[in-house]
Image (cartoon, rainbow, N blue to C red; front, side, top):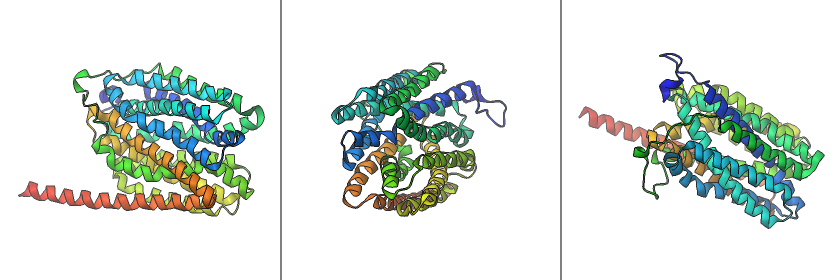
Length: 400
């Protein structure tokens, strides 16, 4: 598979037609998703929902995606990438488009569950297809570029969604979000997919986790808790503080994320996750502390820059680490394991931070988010110590 994408014996080629198409498809589905990220909390508020209900609307989506990802990991190997990717994108289009016609929080909950299933299918499949296409020797760099397509959508989507809501209202904004998913479906249909290897498919239906991906996946759980607080409550927090221009947070954050990913993937390929994780985590902690204070618009932008650079370094490195040691017939399950923990962190964060917002206030959300990143750093150091001990034991056994 890798030889197909090589331009020479020393440096295999990343930018092929298929890689460009998967990046475009990823951009459109993410822009459709990102347009709903800051607008759905406002929509729930319009329907009469509380802070806790806002957190539940976010968490039910991620719980749905979380529950379906293990099945998706199996299905990617048994039913093929094309089928799962296209079906997932189709579900996303229908569910997001339905928001335009909803006037009940109960129905919104139902469609969020369906959207979560489509999102879990499409993002797991998209990441796996990208993994298939990118040469192994440049996986960190390639995943960084692939992530840039989502980051560009993040730069445009949230602010675009907020502006559209103020001009054309929620219904037309949600229909345009669904259009993004439809364009993603069109480009995804033009890809060449890795054929299904029936002899390599695992048949144990309870084998839902790829063990080699558990370490980076568990680290991402604590990292992505921050998303639950930012996506669900930052627009409301800024409004409470009297700080305008919240759309600039998402634009600056995405630009910083894109900048970080232009070089962090190469650092991972050359020096490993040790050179990426700790510096990125320190920046994210600083970003959460800046948002917890939020004394002015300057603190909002500072938080966006720090979080963008930090997360832009960590996420592609952790995803590359997650699939690095997985067998070829379990790359899909490795991606499913990674994104399951990713979703679990976002969903748990949104639900937990909804309770914090109701009882203590928005500022405490970001102090707790900073604490979750500290936990991730501690866990990472434990993993390093254990890995070094195991490496020394293996060396002794080899020498004996």
